[in-house]
Length: 133
Image (cartoon, rainbow, N blue to C red; front, side, top):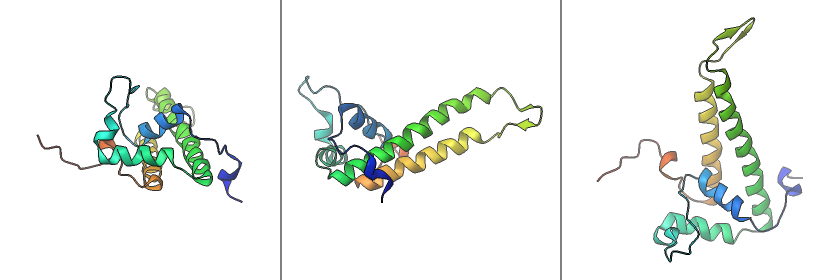
C-alpha cells in the first residue's frame, strides 16, 4: 500500500495549486480578472497549469504527499534561524551548516515535485542559469 493512498483524492484547492506553483519556483498568477492570465503566455507555466487541472486520483494523492513533505521542510527551514545566534550551549553545539543543509534538502524535494509533474523548475531552482538581457 502506498503512503499516498490515504490522502484526499479531491481536486486540488486554489491554495494547493498556489503552493505547487510556489514550490516549483513559479510566480503568482493573480486572479485572472485583469484579462491576462500570465501562465497562458509561457509554455512551462501552461504545461504546469494543464497538469494541475488533469491529474488522476493517484496523482492527486501523490501531489498531496509532496506538499505535506514540503510544508514540513519549509517550516523546519524557517525554524533553523532560531539558533543562529548560539554556537554552543552546554553539551549542545550548533551545526554551522544547518540552514545550508536544510535549504539543499528543501530544494531536492522541490525538484522532485517538478520532476513528478514533468516541468522544469522556475528560475530559483535552475542553478547556474544565465540571464541575458
